[in-house]
Image (cartoon, rainbow, N blue to C red; front, side, top):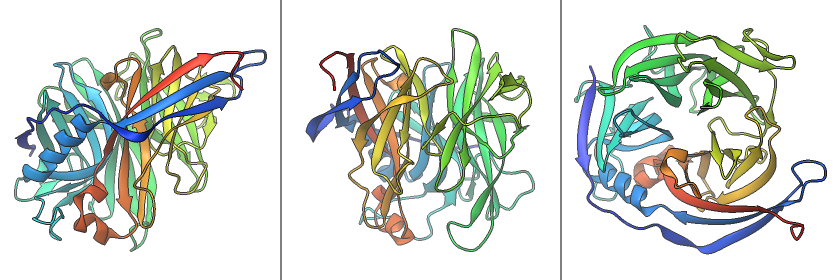
Length: 378
């Protein structure tokens, strides 16, 4: 059963600056003979979204935090926020979570002009993940949500299946991929279909290309200390029933085992969008262990090469037990010059997640990267 809870935040705030306003970064030339690229970066906390979801989480008695935080515009103009692990329930007087707070593996919040609705499975008294592995025990086998796209009047969300391999919080392993199809207006689950994979976690990012009619799906080859991006595409954009093609050394192929690495150092979740005239990939910097850096790469092609690595933001929460991860941009929420970026916050000590709800809530940052080519750049 689909469970819905409504809440409303009337607080509208302007974006607030973070102190150090700008950072000048000079990157390598994009190609031989090209002028170097100067990037002047300024970043501000988006207080409107911070307050909207903070107030809802604190007062609605339903959703108190989650990770992933993909977003997609639904056909009627509402914004669906796509989450993986999710805390439900209430926030206590100390701004913490009760130890018996419900915890599920995926959910969706829909923002309708400031009114938020939380969608889960199960019942109000016994909530469950919105999409569950058929016949599976969610303590041992579950779906996390990847990126999402709208196809006609349907919302399609990539599923990343994981299984428990031991008893600690880090004992889990990737099992496979799928796609969940919802009726976009009601979020009624219509179907779950398998997506073939040869170990690639498909669903890290989606880009709908209006120029060729393909929907491009990025995935991650996760080797732990090393992570590599891969690329697939689907003509017409139907991820459930369309023909998938995979980018390999010989070009595009329908063989799902034939894929190649197109970029090293991405996080498991990232974004690809068209920004200031070029394709732009935003990710947490996975070339460093527990990095606080949110970086972007640029390309003239969705296939790469991706160059001009630039630091957009350093997450102030990172340190001690607290870590940040899976940064991504939300181009539909930007203004052409500004990228709205989210990232996740978590702790190696699960007690922190109950002591303060902010230790497990997405953050929202507006980044303005003024990009120019000039002989004066170094």
